[in-house]
Length: 50
Image (cartoon, rainbow, N blue to C red; front, side, top):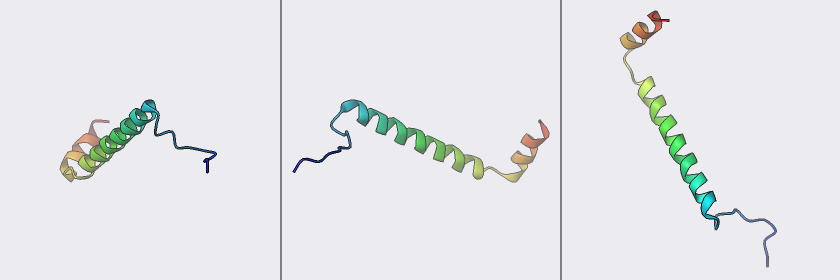
């Protein structure tokens, strides 16, 4: 049986795109976790500079 659609995982460029997307997602998650764990005093200081 032949599938009418495929995921395209046999193409090497698709694997690079998936890998880059995963790395970008993890980097964004790490930045968000870092910013959410900062102390409230540093957040107040940052708000005063605007």
